[in-house]
Length: 338
Image (cartoon, rainbow, N blue to C red; front, side):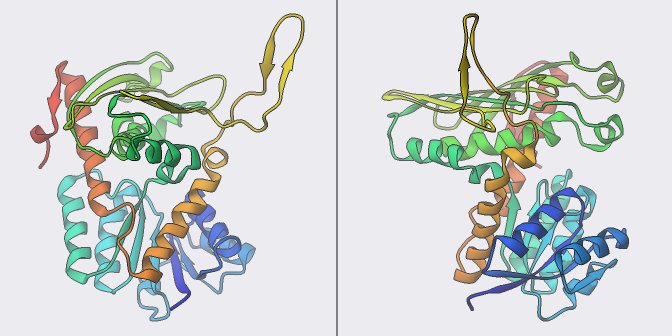
């Protein structure tokens, strides 16, 4: 097999992005069908991109013997059940993060995929960013010696709508979850303990919704590395995404992405344009590389680079961070493992 047939479940913002990439940038995959509970959205994507079929019920995709793999891009509360159904239908599975906000449901989905013998890849796209993957390469190759310190800065340009905040699971499970995955990826070790401090400094309505918008988190890794993550829901200058690993032999870091490399110097200052302001722009190439990695894993019958277990661990880390923030103490992941 040199090409796979794909169906997409959920045609919101991320589903449309994957659909465009499959149609225009991934010649080893063919998009045969899309589905969405709002069938008009699926029909619009199909019409705009020339996808042969659009459905309201995702089971129509699972019943289609021509479809080898499905991309699950629907709302979080549907992921675990759709993974289970897709596994039983023998489909290879790519699922956007998180698999679920409930560990029992995650375990149900992982068990279903394992029983069916199908691949399950979770969508942590930042691993596939060229700069971040180069940082991981440098750490793994020993280019900075033994790693000692990790720092991740992740700040959004603007907070999400309050209605979204109320159902998001909170900042640790919605926003920091990407950074938890990035921490494991960059250091190549598991985290054993988390301490999280936080506050509401951006928008009082976020606090009224039961969440925080600013947090600083420290990580203790199994291999002794210490890590720090800082998050804010609002960086007025743009989408702030930086990482650094300091080690016994040096340091490796990745800066923000900018729309151009121009710097302007005058009598008062040296300045440049602001960083890219939206995650779809910042991680455009990462989404393509991520999907190519999934397609390659199916075609070559190799393990996906981001497994179901990789999807589970950051959720555990998110609950540990929540518990730490609420109780004002360091929390071991073993306290919230199940």
